[in-house]
Image (tube, rainbow, N blue to C red; front, side, top):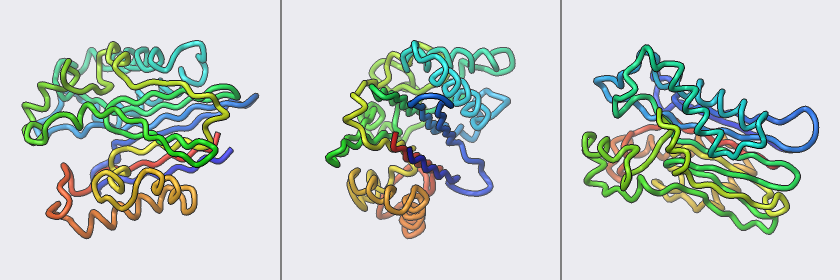
Length: 260
């Protein structure tokens, strides 16, 4: 089994709001991968006294525990229970009704000798490579379907956040877990799984330096940090977003590479 992880904040001194973990059991084959991309709060706050890094750590910890220890639960059920636990942890101290209450995108992968399960919620990306080298991108593209003109307006975007006809993130409502993109693949048909938060996926989606297969090949050959370094170089070459329009000049970036 090969596991490689790299993560980096978009800019200093702002903390990295991504969170990731890979857990493997001490006996038998199998494991679980979690990658979260916390949603940056607005300048006027998000109604929470803790902050997004606290939220992603609490949610990520619950996801890791349940996905690794409760294999009878589906990944959607794991996500629902983890959202519920995390909300309960700050329900008495924070305004969870705030539209920008701490929230995150989610990628989950769980595997054993028979099956690879996956779950994707919002705009992070999961790459699954078959033994013959075919790369399949698993995405939740509902945010991309929101017109760019709407996404430029914070209030208009917030009205579509976790709402029918809009897009969904892991925040306080366990029911959004049922909205996630999920699937199961025979383990023999998966050679590699790669999770990328959208800051790392910029190499493909924003800067068009290659396709998903190129990204996976780069990570396999040179490691996850190389992909992040290339994203940083492209961001630095266009710091004002003139050639490549994007929401932030620099973004937190995480890459997790696993050969189950």
